[in-house]
Image 1 (tube, rainbow, N blue to C red):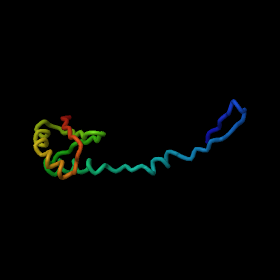
Image 2 (cartoon, rainbow, N blue to C red):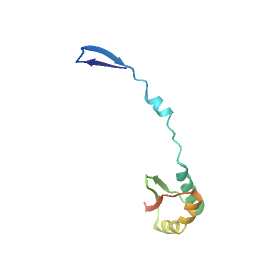
Image 3 (cartoon, helix red, strand yellow):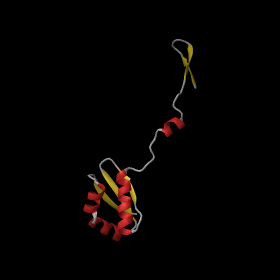
Image 4 (tube, rainbow, N blue to C red):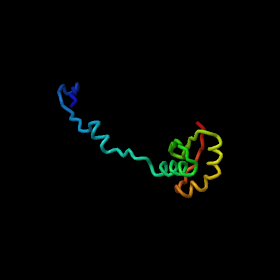
Length: 95
C-alpha cells in the first residue's frame, strides 16, 4: 500500500497495489520455447553433445564447444531446419 500526498489539493489518498511479485511470477511461463527444445534434442541425438541456444527476434544463436562440431552441424542445418520447423536464420557460435 502506498500513501501519496496531492500537493495541489492538499489531501492524502491511498493507492492499493494489487500486483505483488508472487502474482506476477505465477502467470509467467518458464518453459523453453519449442524451437529451443528441438535444437537441443537434435544436437544431443545427432552428436551426443550439449549446446546453448539463444532465441532472438530475427535469428537463433547455437553455441557449441568445438569448431569440428560447428562444422558438422553446419552440414546438417537443412535437416535441423526441417525437423524443428525453423524459419529464422541460424548462427553457429563456438564457445
